Structure formats: structure tokens, C-alpha cells
Image (cartoon, rainbow, N blue to C red; front, side, top):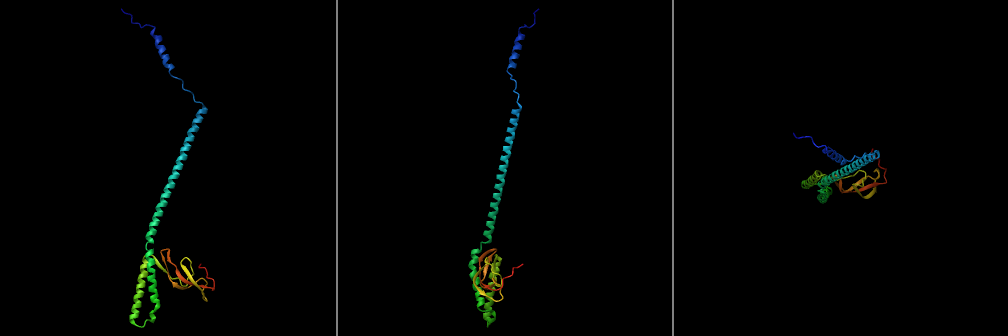
Length: 205
């Protein structure tokens, strides 16, 4: 019979191999409290920096959105103004026609018309003036005829001053030429005569 017992000298060889494998693992260094605190501070600093950058980007975005909205509103307002005041040049050209119609009516009062033909002519001129003024109003053009009103340099242009008994100083006593506005924009100031030397006007309210 054969002896199956393994040789004893193999056991030390296996122990030496195991020891060699253990020698390959180094013991993990133990982190000191100071190092841990420094790492924690570093993490906090990075988070603070990221939060600051995020807040800055958010602020930039809000500013950009606000500027975009302002540009949109400005463009919309410019489009509205362009549409609203598009007839300004054409309207100015028609003011002299309106002035001529008014002068024609003032040159011969209806009461002085002695024949039917003249009265019909005056009626036709008056109808033409009414139609023109109606067309003006449909497009936002209004006549300024401020007789008896207080002088307003925004809409009136004083041509002369005159002493008028009983009229408060600064009151429009005569309108030489009516003015016109397009919506809230002045097309032409009213040419007026203004009272002076009278009592001071009372403030309304």
C-alpha cells in the first residue's frame, strides 16, 4: 500500500504566501479632526460659492427678462403712436382749408344774406365745414376755440394783450385763428388776444 500522507514541508510554504499577501495591504490612515474640519469648511465654501453664482445668474436672468419686456412695451407704444398720429401731416395740410371755410362764413353772416341763392351758398359752405370737422373728430382731431377761457401756453399763442373792463386778467378775449389737437398732441396753437389789467382770475376749485 502507498502512503498518501502529504509532505509536511508544504505547510510553511503556504503560510509564507499568505503572509506575503497580507504585506500588500497598507493600513488606512486615520483622518485627524483638524483635517476633517478643514474638509468640511472647504465643502461649505464651495456650496457658498455655488449659491452666490446661482443668485447672480438668477439676477442676470431677471434683469434680462425685465429689459426684454421694456423693449416689447416700447416697441408696442411706438407702433401705437405711429398708428395714432399717422394722419398728423395730412391733417396739418387740411387746417388751411378749414380756416378758409370759416372765413367764408364769417365774411357774410347768414342774417345779411338778402337772396335765396346767397343763403343756399352759405348753407352749403356751413355743411361742408361741419362735414370736415366731423371727419376731423373721427380721426381724433379737435378744434381749439378758447374764447372766454383762461390762457394756456400749452395750447394758445398770445398775439396781443388788451385791457377789457370786467374781464379777468389772462382771459382769452379774442380768437384770431382756432387751434387744433390730434388726440393729446398739439397740431397748431390757437392764436388769441388776452385781457390784461383786470381782476385776477379765480382758481377753479
